[in-house]
Image 1 (tube, rainbow, N blue to C red):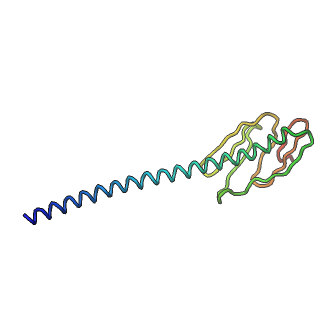
Image 2: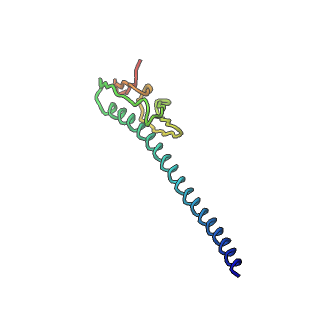
Image 3: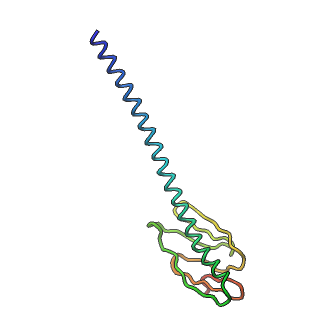
Length: 133
């Protein structure tokens, strides 16, 4: 009778340990999912922030009087990662960072393109020029 009781205890112990292992794996999966979601949200926020910095410079130039000129810098890297920024068809400001893309639509009368690093923005005759040649 004692042997049967020990065998039953061993089986119950193995079943309990297996159950606890699966619960632990479930917690790890949830935690890993939340960490990945947080990183993805952070990358999206960085992409939006870069676009907003550029948009603010353009809006500042638009609201200024003719003859306005200013040099400004966009960082070469953000958190050790490179990114691209460009203006498409003088209407869309597009920022690509890691695996995220953010698009802002610009008002009319914006000519030129943005660069990572140094940029020159001017306003003449109501038109904003970015890095004119």
